[in-house]
Image (cartoon, rainbow, N blue to C red; front, top):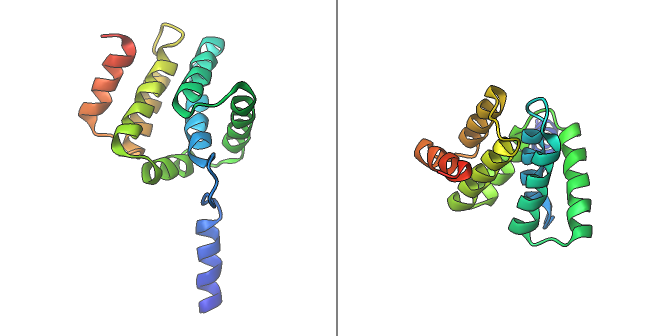
Length: 147
């Protein structure tokens, strides 16, 4: 019985960040990268917003930024869902930081000057998974849109 529990515990904690200072920035970048490809077209403008967000929020230089984004791309490709990223961010960030991330997600969605229905659905789903209240979700949408 103990072996079964240890195996289960190992599976559950396999993706936990083990004192990795880049775990949260990588998870945030992975969500923004997912947003950048959520619709057809505009990827260049959206990727520029992702770079801007990660650079500003986490204070990374160009080399660190490129490495982190490469790691985020790889993590996103290897993940089976976005839940593992949102779980890390929900437990690792303060409510205000999670709301700021939702605002950046909106900025990525609006980067190509149009909001696709898949983008809006994705931001809504991620905000729910990040435990950002609906009122804050709307406020951040308006801020990102410039209104």
